[in-house]
Image 1 (cartoon, rainbow, N blue to C red):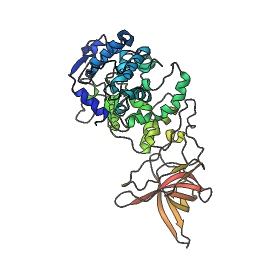
Image 2: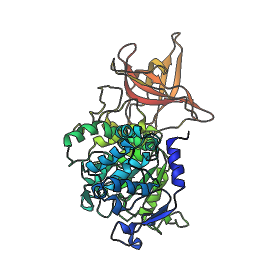
Image 3: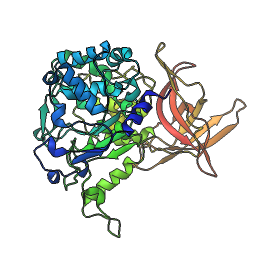
Image 4: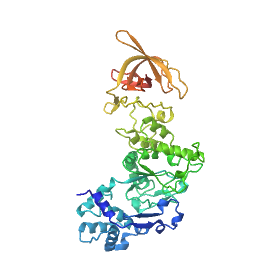
Length: 479
């Protein structure tokens, strides 16, 4: 037996192609709509017009509602199946419009076992499980407050106002889609207490939504045509400048939306590689970075430092999935920036260090064997490192003076064997924190090849508190 989703697609393939114009749902003509792909829809997949979607189910009655669904989905069902009739009655009793009824039922409409449908709809929040895994997501940045409006829509059951640009609507042309303003409770809704509770979990886990789907990116505001003006990058509200959007395109499976003829994506560079203006040049630099997923921790941190958020804690939630931690902190919008996930450990840097202090330059070795995993032992409130190299006592010198930002400092590591034989190693600090001359315990990664001639080890310089517990101070590299 074919999977349910495949059965649905095969059914759609037999439908005749239809064209629905955007002018049937708005007052504009097609020519007035800047984005060509938003002007009309042509295809075999069953879609409905905005006017039909907005029609209350009570207008049709039970028989009329079934007839409309039959006409739209190419079936000839009757009311003789109790479960099916009950679902239609629920749509009328709950005062759904036809769009909500259609969205709730059409993914499961071709089932062979209607007795399973009520359970499926309850457990999957009206999205059949066979279709949910193929859902897409929309990435956008909220425009300035003066440019947006709040809309009460049946799409979210009118539970909270949906903030969208004044010149946009919610007709996205997607069957199932993740859109934050619709899927995450927003302020100003009927249950503010419930929103606060939901956000504790929903906000920090939103990054997971964008890991397995195709992401449609609106870079100039939700539903808006893509434009790059001279002041495009000056506003913190721009898509490239928002903390939240960093996690939304980290896996490269994304599409730029709002494309217009002769728009920014059609701009051609001059022979010298420059563009018509500095904003376009920067726009294309950002696009190139967008096509390169962020894999290394310092790349992620460096990019997040450049971005803005209305609440500093948003940056922590927006970076969680990119770093791939075993656990992530819950979201509390009233917390200070250092509180989320704070276990009081000396080993780990503060958020201020990560966002404000100079980050060490990141070196990519020829292989991945140098990575050393550090596990968090929450029961004993310590970090454990089982595979690291360790030098119990090493004398470090030459790194006590702070250097010029952007430069390396070079020093020496002296180690004495039990027999009294001394060894000297060249060491390099790729940061500007001072390390006073003295004896330290060093914990290092596995030896890795720096290039074809040299090998290197990254070391953490610290003090021993006990035989098994060390306190981190700084990092160095020995070559």
